[in-house]
Image (cartoon, rainbow, N blue to C red; front, side, top):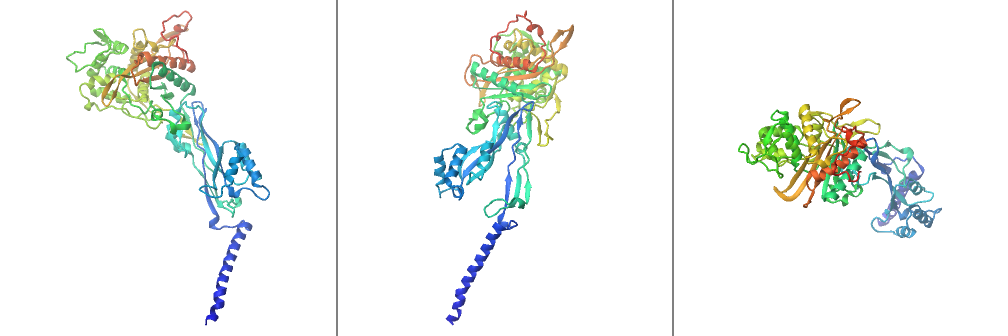
Length: 598
């Protein structure tokens, strides 16, 4: 019986092995000989990265763009062939990538260990290097990965506006983050068949969808004004000893941001190495008490509702039984002052009384109309909305403190937006820093809002600007803000800094916000009377973390404003509304004339 099955036990394994051999042989022959192989095991799918969109400044000049970058990795097992010895391949790799041949030899000698078949050689954006490294007649055993390199063409300039991208190519702050989905584009896709060597059989490609490049985002920022703003701000911080500062230049008619600077800044390419102090965009993501720059808004609200006129007189006595705990004035004031004089000399007591006469509800409503207490919606991430409590939560002291810029916090972009409304005859536009976004075919995919709100009546705005002109004249708090040839409607602010609800002695945030030209000063030309419309609003703030001699807005931030405004008027070609000051015979006194110009 046993001998009966001996033949079966012998031939059964032989038959099984023969069948397996035939199957494997058939598969190998199909893989190498028949290009029509359609086995699912040889199918592949690959995603093609889209080129990240370009960010341009005003006028279309690129300030951030992506360029091709290739990463080269060595696979020692695939190096060399009968016609191309490994020594020759190593020599070609080393010379093409400009790396030592010894380094390539050490990598090529590895036969085990983690990642030994994918050893990093180099990265390069050189097209000639890419062509040489992919030439199979010279080099074998090198894998090439297609990447992108994000380049910031202005260096550190515009860092808070542009932002940065992380290692995965995702925007991490600034426009890069806010418009990441538009800039990223849409990846492409390839599906097809590979042969036994892992190479695609081109004529068997099933799907081929090319990637769609990201949108091009065009900013409203003018790089020349941006450079001037950053230079002036850095100079002011060094000159007056401020630890940080911010500056915004805004177009009056459209509320487009022409320049936005925040210091300290960072290198977009090395965003991960920046400190928290460098990363914060103080122009939009920092709440601060504005101080006396808020008095302009108080005066506008009171004049607009008919409670006062610029000539209305007030007593400067803070011990007035009609009012509760009035703020004091740090400088000696005459017994009585008009509303205009209170703006020019920055009287806390008079403006506090105006706030009481106006009432908390009307004061709150006016602040809301000017955009305080809410985000402006500017196209940058991380915007704060300020701190403005509802008027029902104000105590009696707040009735006179909010009108002078205390017990309320704002952002720089809110403050500039409010002054833009005063400059624009009471019409407040939406602040924006993006002009448009376009796809690869030139179709517009984003446009900023152009809706407007009326903050005050046109005649009110003009009356307020007329009062503000005196701030930079003789006797005003910001004589150093004067710009020869132009009238300036501005206001100073020196806000004592607070921490945990307690004001810190000797620490201040100094601001100056000015409209240039004022739009309310007439001049003669060709025998006719003319006005020059307001062109820009400029805010400069210097933040002091220690006591500094020149910590007031009038003797620090106003000087920086003057330097920047002087450049802006020349650069923008704005017609002077005080041309007589530019004549050779003019000898008007100017305390900062000797400061170097930008």
